[in-house]
Image (cartoon, rainbow, N blue to C red; front, side, top):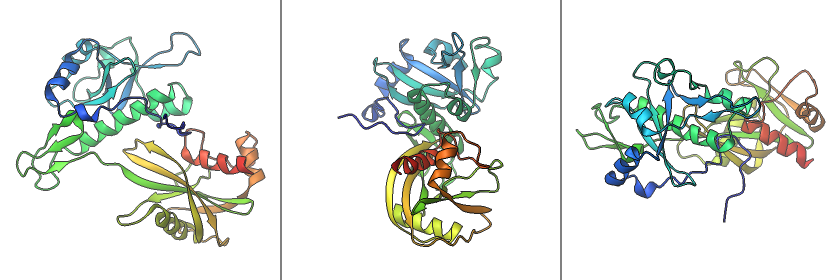
Length: 313
């Protein structure tokens, strides 16, 4: 049975990740050389994107055949198997940042490397391809940050189609990591609590969020972050949805919670302000009315938490 659609951007990855094939070196080499396989090049963590065929058609990810990409790869290039698409093609992501920008050479006039967040905000790429690009960006970023063994400092080797690094010296194994983050909307009656971080654009308020600590449950993290940042006690923590967030590699765990207290005391570090907003105020802002503040756009899980609560009312 298929999963229910996830409302969040960077979710709903349509690929078969074929984890059972990652240790099959012969199969992997065959697919990397197969003319039917496709590679998406990354440069400075930005995917290669093809322009619109006609205005309004939307852009396409630059899936290129091996013969166009492999000549640009070096022995140190990071290439990761993303999975198999519905047509049976193997898809790879490869980092070409070590050399000259191919946008000005081999790929000149074909397209350009673009920021993934910008593509998501503008809605120029389909949700499924955004999810695949989030996978590719996170994986390449992890390899670029973890070229040396955390145990002994020796250079590590990439294994299993990019899903493991092994130290040839001390034999330690290292695996790609995802950092869990709770993001929550606390409500009390007909009001919801939103906060502002110092780095937010002017007028923007959002759900509170924070990293889950070792040995901590999701519910405990929600309660701790609400108390630390805003001085609010909560109960009845309820899961809403998750959002992969490739900056660099987090999993946003969206929750709702009932506030037991109402007096706000911001910490002055994570938050510079926190306020209660009525359901009617948030409904109006979501409808595009100017109320003197705004909330994150639809590509952010905070928006989906707010919208879900507003719609329930």
